[in-house]
Length: 450
Image (cartoon, rainbow, N blue to C red; front, side, top):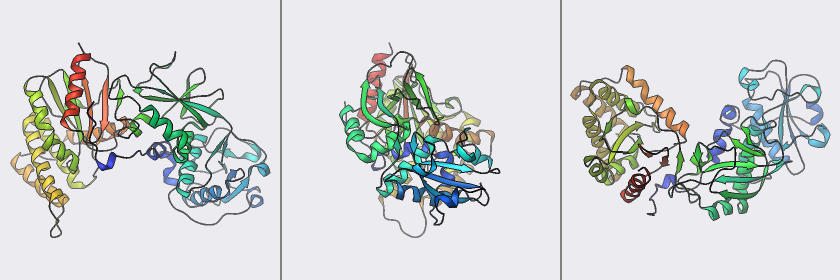
């Protein structure tokens, strides 16, 4: 298989992105440092309090967690004391350390949503263990200190992809998790258990029906869902997570692309060219240099497949550069398309925009004018020449398309989805690929959809 060319942006494994998803709900609380706090005795009295309970060796990690919490929970719990408590002094045992405990009568609904419906001694309620483990793992990796400690162990079970494009590099995965302390800490946090082995299988076990492949599970005799609502037992002793790990590591040396049974949404309201059985959808952003490179070097070859009725090409929005002029052009062109149904003009204007972007990307910047400024000028030109407006009912579909792409795990541009009309498999990947890569995909789908 042709080795895909990737942008620098997608050339390294960003497993920390997995944890960003896991802790997204609590990220607002945990962004800045502030000192303060008190001793265990200070925290164990009456009144509202937040405690970080830790085991030996986690003292520095506990202090950093406390500092984050003291600042970020200020608007969610009034008059609270913050402290760290060594586990032996607290008494109750937990299956994950450190654990964050909250004791208060009046808290915000946001804080309440991440607390477990469990009360331990003296009225303390734990924060969800999956959130705490993920956050503590991030802090530990950043500081180079001892990370979370787990009572339970698990084997990471990977159900491999079913296509040549979605196969895991098994040796690279095992080396990454079992020999690299940083990533071992992060993967263990996802499943709130110490990962002791990695096993890759071709077919899912009985009762396991992955929607996305490769699919990542934890196998453990312990109940990993205890205190971790993001984990579910899908078969005896097999747990899945809410996190799309395959999407997060795709485009790395471990995994190139992932597959799903789910088609991208919003195709009917977005432009398409051709009527071939193989479908290629690009998720694009008009300020994306690698999208511009795709249209310059790859799209001319794909056009030949469109012309001979082999490929149907779709365009979808994925706004990564959230600039008002970028958003305006996306909405303006989509409004034009929905008013006229003219995909050819849409693509013609898109390619013209990307041609200008290539010029800006290759030439030294002179003066104060940026490409965003130029996009504002182009938007005004298009509004006049196409008699179009960015204010129409279809304009909201730009934001919907972006949200849908992010939900699928597509976090950069360009991203792509490739499928055929007679196949239930959709292959997704993030980042630029050369024409030969698309040729291999087209050939594979034609051969496997008959």
